Length: 221
Image 1 (spheres, rainbow, N blue to C red):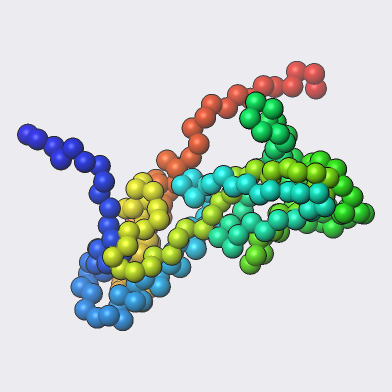
Image 2 (image 1 turned 180 degrees about the horizontal axis):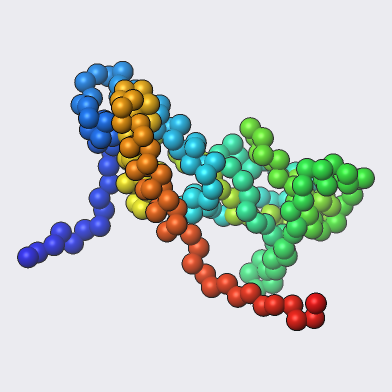
């Protein structure tokens, strides 16, 4: 028997919505239901940002620092910064130096935030306009290199596919079905919520870094 030879299966927004309604024991019959489902889908993406790391949304970013700079805007689609370094030089002379992340209180208590040097600390303000504050302020040209979690893109038009990794597609369908059950099929809420949480657990357990970790006991204690 021949196989397809492809591994590109995906669902457009309208197909996702249709599948989710079928799990609710319904068929989508009106434009308002489609609009309602898309709104629920976007809210579901925001909930996933609160549930933890989504590896496909981790991206590397860079920001140029010049003398006197002590803050840079990170972009409104930034959820959080995971790690950062200060880069000096280019090419074979390039060096990346780790900087420590500090809390809002620690940054507030710094007596002179405008003192200049090579930045060694970073405070990330997670507001509606996320901003990274570095200390000391740059005393020359540097590059702030960081890994960030970005927001999942909105669903957009109904012919779009979603901005998720294929591993989360079953979870996305069951999550949307649960959200729609809250509105249209209250008798199925319990079952669909259980299916959704199980699907999310499986996907999130697989969506992780599998690098080796070695723990060495401190025998000098």
